[in-house]
Length: 283
Image (cartoon, rainbow, N blue to C red; front, side, top):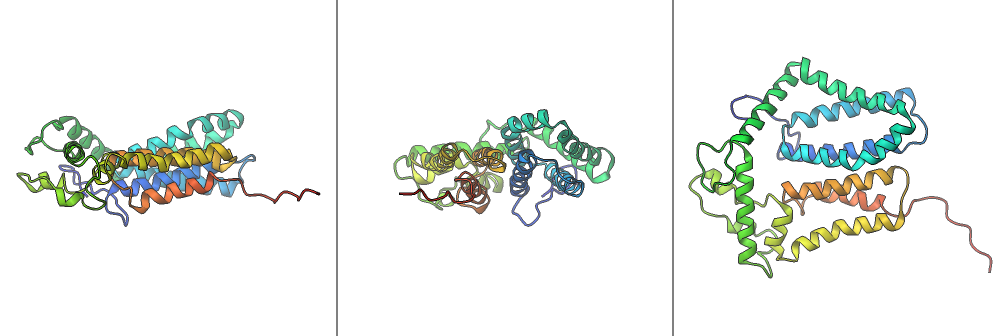
C-alpha cells in the first residue's frame, strides 16, 4: 500500500493492510514489555541483547507502517504499561538502559537510513493529507486525500443503519449488503465494510451489540480483578485489554482472529496463577 505523492510502500507482511500488521506487533510489544517489567532479577547479557534486538526491530517495523490504527494500538499498550514501567524503572534504574537504547536505535534508523528517512517523509506527508482532508463532507472530491474521509463517511453510514434497524440489527456479516450508493468507487468502498467495531456491532446485532462487545472485555477485567495475578500477567492483561478496546475504534474486527487471540491470551493470563496445589486439609 502506497501513500500518494511519496512512492513509499507501507509494509503489510502477510496481512491485509498495515493496520493489521501494527495490531499484531502491538500485541507482541505488550507481552515483551510485560516480561521485561515483571522480572524480579536482572536479565543475563544474552537475554538482554535478544530482548533489545527484538524490541528495536518490532518498533521500527511498527513505525514503518505509517498507519494511524497501528499507532493508536501501540499508544494504548504504552499507556497501559506506564504505571508498571514507572515502578520498575524507579526500583531498577538500569532497566531504562535497554528501553532507551531501543528507542535510540529506532530514531537512528529513521534519521540516518534511506528506508527510515522515506518512512519519516511518508508520515509527514500523510499528516498533511490528514489535516487537509474535509472529513465532514459526504461527497467525494479532489480534496479527499486521507482515509480519514472514508472512515468518517463509514461512521455516518453505520449510525444511519443503527437508526434504521435498532432492535435486531442487520445480522452478522450482512453489512456489505447495505452499502450506500456513491458517485465513485471510493464512495462505495467507504460503506462496504464496517470500520468501527463499536458502531458496527450495533448495526449488525442491534443496540445490544456494543453491550455484548463491551461485556466480553469486561469479563476479562472482572476475571483479572478477582484473581489479582502477579508477575507478567499483572502487566500484560491491562495492556491487552486496552489494545482490544482501542482496536475496535478503528476496525470492525470483532469476528477476526487478530482481536480474539490477544483477548483470549489476556483471559488466560487473568486467571488464577498456576503453582503447586495446596496441601489437603486433615479431617
